[in-house]
Each structure stands twice: as structure tokens, then as C-alpha cells.
Amino acid sequence: LGRSRGGWARSASGLDPAGDCCRASPQLDWALLESALSTRTACWAHHEALGLRAAENAVCVCDGGERGAFRQKGASDQPYLWARLDRKPNKQAEKRFKNFLHSKENPKEFFWNVEEDFKPAPECWIPAKEIEQINGNPVPDENGHIPGWVPVEKNNKQYCWHSSVVNYEFEIALVLKHHPDDSGLLEISAVPLSDLLEQTLELIGTNINGNPYGLGSKKHPLHLLIPHGAFQVRNLPSLKHNDLLSWFEGCKEGKIEGIVWHCSDGCLIKVHRHHLGLCWPIPDTYMNSKPVIINMNLNKCDSAFDIRFREPGGQRSKGASLCQEIST
Image 1 (cartoon, helix red, strand yellow):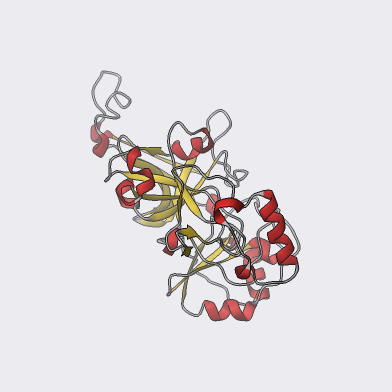
Image 2: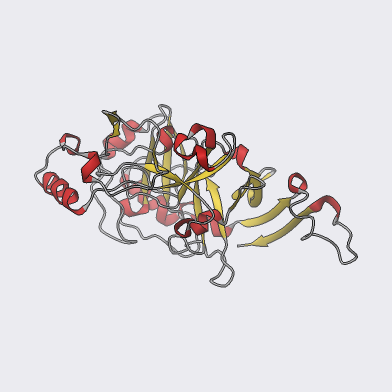
């Protein structure tokens, strides 16, 4: 999502919640979609937008000092990884809300009692930025959820795979993105958390969303972060149903989860394969067709890896770096 306003994306009207990997195509308002995307940059989709099902594997990096709910957990200037966590209504409130929607009423007109209608949230939970508030309480979105974030801590089993990609002691994270000198290559590298501040990223890997990219194994799990908006779509199809369908089905670049348009007003709008009645995950994804460089430049973390990367004679490897080329 790049640097998304409010910590998350807004969706176009008419985009229904994503369901199973293959289903009937929902009715999209293509005229509205085309109008909304008149000024746009399109990127690969590795996430769910706010108007769709919440992406529990989305993360955000922010300064601990900017998040009062977590200030006591670390230094005020320490970058920290936060995981997406939506507050959801309890069963009684959800039933009332569904009955209200079935009557074809506007979901924004539904009355929520945030203090009583929602399941308890962790003490360290914070709402996403720019969420509307009334009397100090965040207002639920059109799906009845309150988008928010929780800090990723090492001792939290629920977020063990999130914490596996970050090292707070040395303030680095394991990130996958384009190689800086060759757009045809991908690069896995250790990136300072300070370089990721206020960005949202996607967690992918062995134990995430069925592992569509085939990373790692049960014995040797592998997880990575991908900055949202890191992969731009070069040959963008026209904003017509049949053209989008043909693009996803007929070209190599279309073997992706979806497209997210980054609009000039900060709004992000997603078209997922599900909206066109197409399956996900799929075999032979576009990302899997690209070679990958693993580049671990350890110069900034010299003492941390001093023991691990020594040559047989006890001498330090020249350059203190590990670089290996593989194909996914």
C-alpha cells in the first residue's frame, strides 16, 4: 500500500468481501471504478483493502514515541513493527448489524455502542490513523470493523511469524523487493527499520495464507516482508471487465493476486482476482518466475554476526556479507 493514509486503504463502493479462492463474480460498478481511477498508479496486490476482508498479515513500522499506547514497551525513538488487528463486534451486535444490512439500509446509519458492542481489544491496541471518532470512540467502517494495530512482541505466540522477520536489538527486518540495480531481479535483504517508518508492508511465507509462493518448509519456515506498492504494474489493462479478465488470464504479468490503484488523493482501490471470478492462489505466480538475490550486508550489525560468519581459521569473512543467488 505504499504510504497509505490512515494506516490502511479505502475501497471503492461495490467491492464485496473476498471469500474462498474461487467463487461467482460480484457486481462491480465499473463506471464508478473508472471514474475513481482517473489519476492512478497501479501496483501488485499482496493484501486486502479496508473495504474487503481484513488482512491479518499486514504490518506497519512506526516510531514507538508516536504511539502512546506502546510507549512503555520500548524507547520513545525505537522503530517498532505493528500488526493489523481489526476490532470486531460481538455475536449479538453482529446479528443486529446483519439484520440492518438485510433491510438494505445504509451501514453508516447503524448505531454502534463501541464500548458494549465490540469484543475486547488488547490494552496496547490502537486505531488506524484518521479513523473517524465520536466522543473519543473510533467509528466502525461499513463492514462493522474498527481497523487498528497491535505491536509485534517476541513473546506473543499469535504473532510469532511476524516477529521472525524483525530484530529489535539491531533494528532490522527481512525484506523482499526489487533489486536496486536490476528490475528483473528480486532481492532479499536486511533493511533498517528506520527506512520503513510509517510504511505498511505485507508478511508472506511458509505459514501465511496457504503460502502461495512456496517459501520454506515446515522444518525450515521462511517469512519475509514486502513493502506495499513496491511492485508497479507496467502494462496496465484498460478499466473494462473483459479487458481486466483477459489480462489476468492471458499474460504472464497477470499471474498475481490483484491490482491496487494509488490515487492522487491518497485513496487506494483494489481489484482482486476474486472480483472477476478467478482463483487464488494459483500455480506459477509471476513473482515465482523471477530470480532472487539474497544479500545480507552485515556491516551495520558487525557485533551481532561476528561469531556466525567466521572462516575456518577463525578469521572474519571479507566484507562481512553473505550474497547468494537463487531462483524461486
